[in-house]
Length: 151
Image (tube, rainbow, N blue to C red; front, side, top):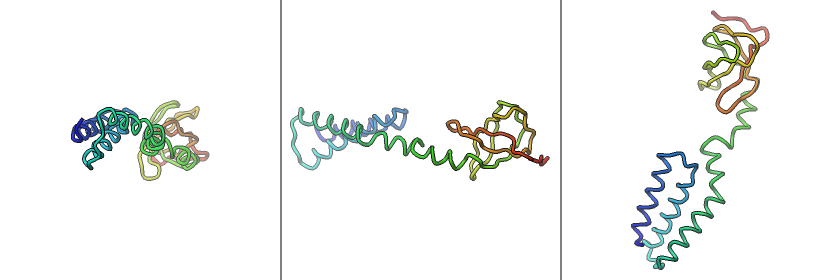
């Protein structure tokens, strides 16, 4: 296959990764195709079978060696433990009435988060709350001890 064919395949695979959530499998296959295309552009004349072998080896090796690290870093899996430790114990204010087990939005560290009231009682608007855990992208909150309403 010509070098420009590999580049087109690589760009299409990388673009498909952007349009779907393929967990970086298509991205690494695209990069491998682009690398084979760049080899051809640089004048390395490989027979078709060797191009396919090089593509396969590059794609599989890069997926095995780098995919999980990239996926964790870009999708948030790598820093979850650090955020959990930073968020637990943080004080937030409930901006709307929220029933026990109900969801609301709160601000923490300059960002708005979904919060779930895991306490036994409803919290009225303006109640201070404490983050007790995180569940994915949601904060689990309970009413803060001796909290005062800020109606």
